[in-house]
Image (cartoon, rainbow, N blue to C red; front, side):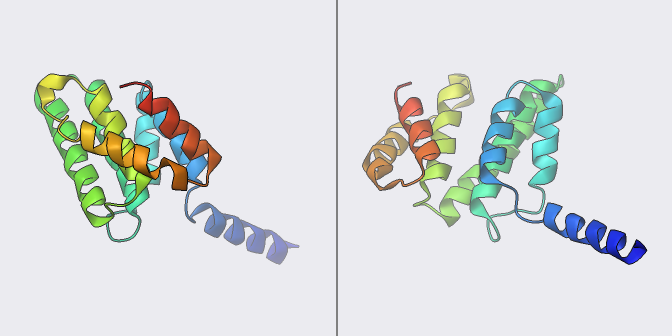
Length: 153
């Protein structure tokens, strides 16, 4: 019986340590925009990802990193979180420029942040890319996300 219990615990830990569910990550990012604890949790879950081993998850981690700026008081920390996240997102897009979801993340980010930060230079380019690529998207949830966000501009 103990062997069965130990085997189950080990299997559960391996399963939990696997690749995160993309739908869950998407919903966590939405929650992270208003809750610091959700933002920190998302960053922690996506900690292992970088531009070499998971550009899309790295892009989500980049957005969560930028979102952390709204939860800190120190202006230098705000700028630091923003710049770090922006650089991460740009790095992810440079590594996978045809990834429609990464481009959607940048498009939404550039729409949502204050213009004085100067991170809005890709809005037209990303909008056109999203419009051109929308018909090739097979996942309905992603197609709806893109369509809804394109209506914002």
